[in-house]
Image (cartoon, rainbow, N blue to C red; front, side, top):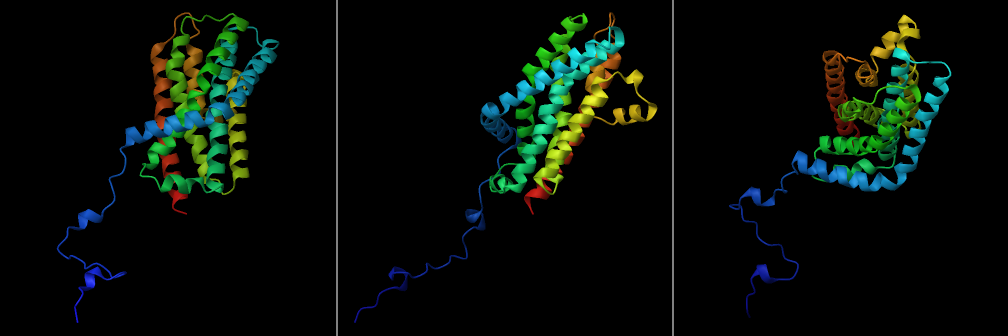
Length: 274
């Protein structure tokens, strides 16, 4: 009669080596923020390229149509500067605020957040990557709107380069707000509604000249993140722009962008664990 070791029997469990290091069973390290951010950005950009381009045309034509309507009311001066600047930033609001709120609302309702939660990707990379991809789609429409507005109202185009700072800063502020609205809304329909209301606020408070607004509405206008991008852009149309005020408005817009993206990241963590 031969004796067979238990280790070679079929279905037998291997002995546990208590001296083995527990680090051998640990998962791999999480991806670093910047490489993960780049990967999410490229994935979102390629995914939304076909679906969002028609909506970008809608946002651009909407802003151009508003300027054409306002041309019969506003002749020039500071009011024309406000209309052109507000219409240009409205393109950013339509994509970065409205569409991003809808995207994250649908992503949460369909369980898409579970997919990202299983990946070794930091929550900040998901939010920033999606926000950056959506904000990137606003660049052509914003530039076209600004150039058309300058031609329509006879404004100088010497300082249109300031859009290089206005678009990402206003886009970050509005994209963070849109992502937070979409992630905090309990239903996708409510996220869509909140995104539409935010874009309507950017339209009414950003395009219309502030001098014609009641004091209460002006206070509400100061609370809107896109207001500071509009003000910074509008100031550059003057003969001698006060660059200190321009930089101040851009700085405020940047701070609001950091805060809104931080809130969106917190909202993502909150929604992903539910």
